[in-house]
Length: 418
Image 1 (tube, one colour):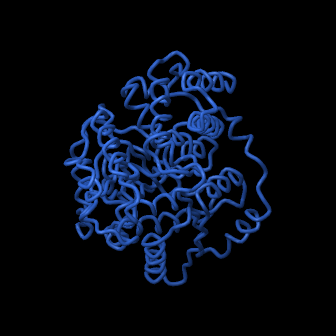
Image 2 (image 1 turned 90 degrees about the vertical axis):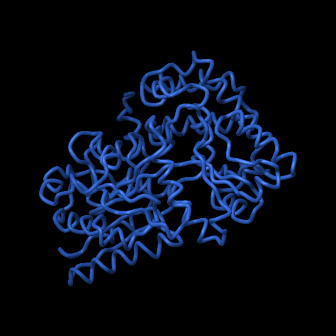
């Protein structure tokens, strides 16, 4: 695995006064826990409050203080406060080496091996969910979601364009996109102001043009980005998608705004994950008019990632924190959670919730995939590498960089970083 330089973590800027003020209020009595998450909207916002309230009722005298921030502010806050007394008792985070692994590397996460034995967690979770927890040695965190990502599509817009079935190859996907353009329909929506949204497309194009082995070598190993023609091919395809198939003005809007194009029938596809099932319903779409298929990379690997709750290494309330997470991932807790975060529970004993007809679709996709997973590159790379990857991605999309120079530019950055 390509090592993430420690100095990239150390270079994180000093915390803002606003974040310091918010975090400084997090700790109080011995029965109070602080919990940090990204902002939870819609069904997720309602459900996380229901979970907290239920735990507090079951444990009189306890109190959970939930602090929520935007995605980027959440990342910045955790990185800035790592190693200080300002970190929360529990934090939610992605499991990839460039995010959750980064904080494990600096000692922010408590190894929960004793809790896994004491509370029977080794048998609670699916093997796939546990894989992200044990990847750094010991048991770092408690799995919360296991997310697959694929192409959501409007069945009615596909039919209007004469596309009779979801594409199963990349060539069929391009043919479908061309048919949608010919019918006056925007093939797919993205919001470019949050770089990670368009990055999903680039990640899938790299898997498509490079294949699984080379893509792994490039993204999680020490592959040479500057010497592979398949890398140039992926960036060339990215530019083509930007010119022909993405919504007009995508670089000037965020993911929430672009998702509205899908919800309102103005774009035919969205590259999203299992969490999007609930969003489809929350935003008034008929889920029976929506289909899902994996991005046809040709490798039979699914694009996805895991999310977990971590207990801070320096909390004085680790037993209470473990009790809270035990409830959150129990059958009782997962019945409250339903499909608010994911179509498939990390608790191995939970059946698929079929109230949303898109949930069984994901269950079948997970069953059909036999090649494993490949993760979002902002979870694979260090913060500095991710920032450079996004700069190059955007430069290619805007025409400021030739796709043929993209791989070599990123390789030089990685070598300079050490």
